Image 1 (tube, rainbow, N blue to C red):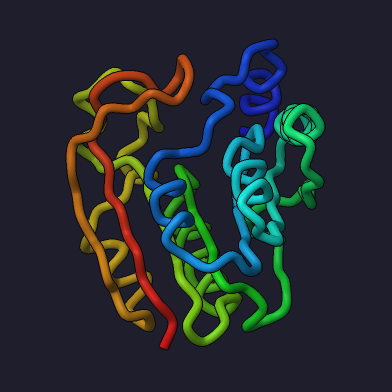
Image 2 (image 1 turned 180 degrees about the horizontal axis):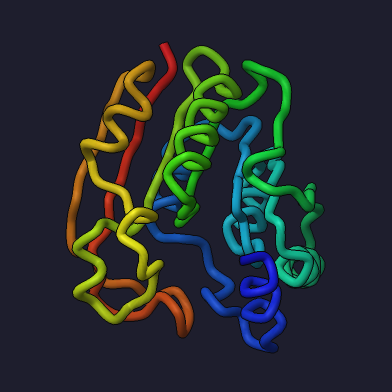
Length: 198
C-alpha cells in the first residue's frame, strides 16, 4: 500500500489539487487557530492552508513522495510545516496536546481505523475539536475516487461508535460535488463529522 501511494504522488501534478479540502477549510475558518494534527496528509494541501491561517500544524503520512510534494508546496506558499513520515498504526504523540485533529479521507482497514480514532480522541485537549470527512459505502456507485473496499468506507453509525466519548455537533451522510484534482472530481457521497471533547 505504501508503494501504491508513493507511485501516485510521484506524478508531477498535485493528485488531489493544491487547495484545501472544502469541508476542512470551512470548519477551520470558524475555529481559533491552535495546534492541529493531520494524519494521512498526502501532498500537504490541508497542512499548508492551515499553516497560512496561523495554525501550528503537525502532519504525518507514510508516503515519502507525498511528503516531498508537501514540502515543495509549503515553500511555494511561504510557510513552514512539520510533516513526519509515519504509519497510522505506529504514530503517537502526547495526550491532550491538540486543539483539533482532522481526518480528511484517512481511509484505513477497520482495526487500524478504530485504533487511530481512539488515539485521536486521546490527543485532543478538553474542548478540542475532531473533524472528519471520508467516503461513505454509497461512494462505490460513483466514479469520483475513493477505496473500492467497502470495509474502508465510513458510515455515520460507525463514526458515532468510534467517537462515542466525544460530543457530536455534526454527523451527516450526503452527496457532494468534489473539485479536488483528478482523483477526487465530480459527484461523490461522503460522511462528515464535527465532534468536541468535553
